Length: 332
Image 1 (cartoon, helix red, strand yellow):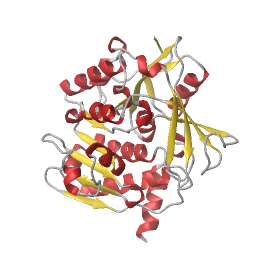
Image 2 (spheres, rainbow, N blue to C red; image 1 turned 180 degrees about the vertical axis):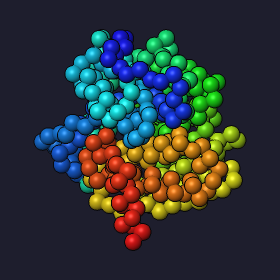
Image 3 (cartoon, helix red, strand yellow; image 1 turned 60 degrees about the vertical axis):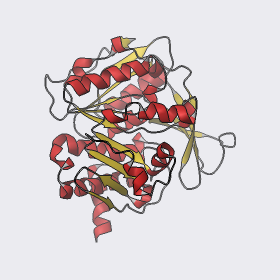
Image 4 (cartoon, one colour; image 1 turned 45 degrees about the vertical axis):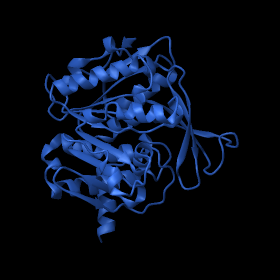
């Protein structure tokens, strides 16, 4: 794979830098909700991929490490990253593979299902030798999902990148982002996701993912706490429009969500994570100060809610001003 020739050069040290590792793809979203893919008369083209959504959601320093197909979609996605001020130093183009695509079925309530075209796509064949480990070691936070664990050689590259971050004392952030159609089986997904579970400093899961991973009731705190381990700094469970729950070694609690006109829930969790990581990168004491954490999570809940009011993930990401406006309206 070839590196991007015009990628900006990062500073030698970057105390607030968040590096996001994983996939970016094109989501084709139906122009009408509540119908099947076959019934849809047209689609809206939207950039997506959870690690990329998180990178774009962060308004400070952020970088992506991922490969693209050397095709029009790949170049379009890199341009979108640049437009969102994401440093693409860690991105690569592969002349022999295509950029991944996904067709998204929108239910009438904005929830979605995915059909993926990536067999294989460029992101699946990233190798350890192609990693920019110096970039990772300059970060404050290294963020990743689980899709890059599904196939080799990307799985080995993911683990090598994660271990480089851990050995350098970088905070590791994990959002599993379960996509069952991409895994060989449900059990393979559980095993793969849990195989790196205890490497993370911060984990965010949805209530649906808690139910899937524990095979139990996501609202039973015993099931949630079965995902806790010594060394974890923060576990957050997002409950959709109901808000979120948080767990640390010293305290736990919940915060309500925001009622909005939901159109498409794609990217809501990534907007939540991105806003949280932005604040953690600025102030690591958030993990240990409940008042600070609650303030940050309130903001993250607002970001996640606003992201559901438009189609697509990256196009729907909110600004700080719109999130604060929603919080203000709810307070008044």
